[in-house]
Length: 194
Ligand SMILES: [Zn+2]
Image (cartoon, rainbow, N blue to C red; front, side, top):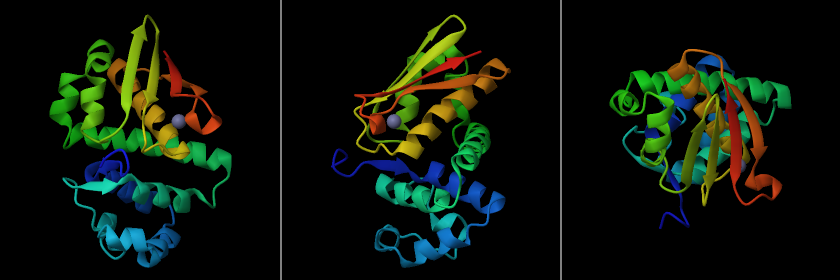
């Protein structure tokens, strides 16, 4: 079923929702959750922290796509880019400290990260082929065959890889977006430079 109904892990969704609620006015997102049939069917509760999302459960990616659309609809491109950078920094740090500490310990160098990226990805997404190839002072990061794709979510995925590399290397890492299926390309790719 995952090809027709791709899913994401509640743990990550809950962290993003919590982060957004404590950094932005999210009343319009709350109102949306209260009225949207898909959110209601998925068990989201607008009045609970992180909309009641259960970290260990899987949720239709379409739910997160809708929340992203609503959360970002009032932002300019620059505001959205800044929000994505800040949120992926914060959420990846939170996941690394919390539930996924053991997993991160396993992949804590760029070389190991590139070897285990698919395994790490599969903890949070049930579709999508992920690859990170390290070469000297840069890495190529790609996602393909991902029915759960959404343009903003894709940017968040690449920005998360930037945040994790920056943490592993303990220095700033620059993200250069190269391709996205939203622009008609067959896959989504970016280059990380440090
Ligand atoms: Zn993409």
